[in-house]
Length: 512
View 1 (cartoon, helix red, strand yellow):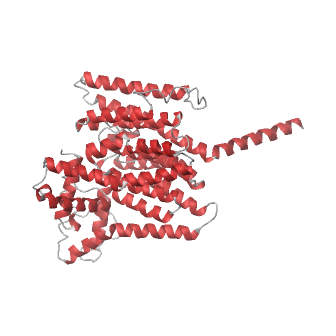
View 2 (spheres, rainbow, N blue to C red):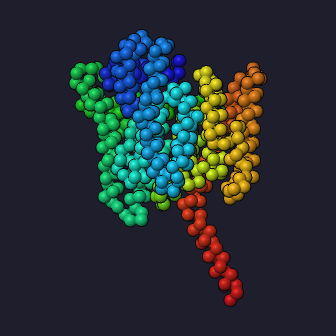
View 3 (cartoon, rainbow, N blue to C red):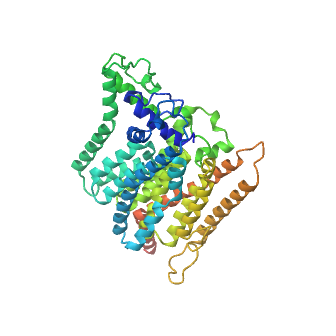
């Protein structure tokens, strides 16, 4: 239980017992708080509520490592309730609007909604490994839903809430920014709309940090000593140094500490075995020997390059129907190339990609094959983490159930076989061969991992090969999402029409 479960419990412990100004400073070596303020407020509320039931669950310091069965039930219940308050209604409302805009009927929409809410990776991470990712994803879905209902100001506010809950929402930020900016500039320039979106975003961030900053001011004027709090490196590197006696010192100290904790650049490029580009490269060339500053810059350049395409497309053509493609492409780019990626971050690219099931082609064979394969691959890359938490059986049950629901391997081949009644819906031989190769490799990997122990000299051979295969597959997912984005944006059609026009002109000139 000394994993993410204990981290979440510990945050409830410190937020309910300590002054606000100490939340991001207290005993950072033991699961120090490293998420944005909205997570802290959420932990404070759940900690206060749980303390009413049993105060020993969150007793300061004395409750560390507690394994009370009643506490486990309470904590698991908070995940379910939080999900049903935020994620489930927001996803349902969004999918209804999205499916209606795509001309999808009620039955198909309900089938897509079931598949989205039953994503195995999301359930296993939040309910098994223990996280509150669905709260963040719920705010994100509310933001998307607001766009489809043409309430852009609400969209900006909800997206700030998602960012304020978990910093991983940054995976979506460039595309959301590009879309909102593009909607203000094309087809007509709407400066008032742009100004209002900016003001709402600024107000939302202010309200997000207001309880934290005001609490720090209160603690400061109550005489709480700040000299004992070690200023973060970020504060020391500011161009203007602020004296500890200044009234602004508590604000600057707290703000820089929060940013320092949220973005832990000192931890290195990646942790553990995660299926992204850097772990892939590290397997063959030990990048840990490279300068950390150089790696940070390289990661930044690669990430910017990977998200530039989808941002340019959605900014130039801000159509709502293109948003899931652009968001999935951007999130895959972040997952593959950005700094400090965790295995569970795969939930972010998987969600917008899975939302495509609610579109006009969502339940067609091609989309079911690609979206199903991406989800099965994503869930498979989480297996080493889930196995450590004793979740091998839920992993197998949920993955197989979801595969059966979508008609994909290993429970069914219906997504890849031709239907005589709908011959136009088929999956190309290349896609079939590609996916089959991955499914076979995943099955072989599970068999070897189950029955053959790793060699003593290479104890991590199974997690490493899992990450290598996953990184290749996720790179393919990125390319597929980006290809579909460009294809349905119409840019490719315009280019082909332009090339055809040039050929016609050359033919006419030759005839003359």
